[in-house]
Length: 274
Image 1: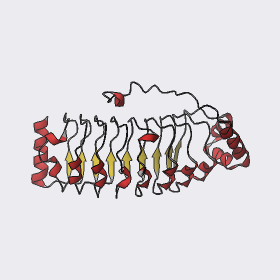
Image 2 (image 1 turned 90 degrees about the vertical axis):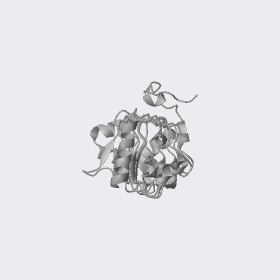
Image 3 (image 1 turned 60 degrees about the vertical axis):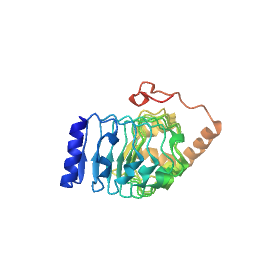
């Protein structure tokens, strides 16, 4: 397989191809493929379904790269240099073994789509500048371990799609209501019992908009409104009655619902460093 990957890299170099497809080539270390990190003319590289456990700092040599797909590998960390890629718009590192993101990860200049689905990330995994990704339009954080989101989430003013399904979220910050461009939100499969009143500021009711919310242990008043329609829910959240009940529930500081997902056998847990 390594020989076939090298042949594809050589052809890409000779033909000055803008794309390189190395899907399912049993690659464990991209340094073992001569010339790959010298393809500074390439715009898109797909390395999905391999066995890559780390990326070298020299990934930053791919200065014209716009899309990098590393879905379904064995990555446990990412190099700090990754965020220095000036043209990168799409980064897919879903279904890996990431426990944290490197310092300065929010320094991408052009990143529009980030897929972190099915890793081992939580609120402590995000660097302080994560929410400074000014160009980010689509963020996939599903199938991780988040119980909370940083309040800085409201700074992602370009965000249109936010996927948070199947985490352990017990609350959403009020700043989520500041995502004025958000048109698609997935929060199903969490531990949410209430939504902040500011949530009603989101524009998720249009025919082209998407709001997924099932499999949450909602408090009875919220469930009653959801059973009627999403628009009833939003009207209810805007009401003084809800704001009063929300305040009481927060003040009561009741323990969160128990976790319903056993994630100990996730593929992303395999081979984790102790």
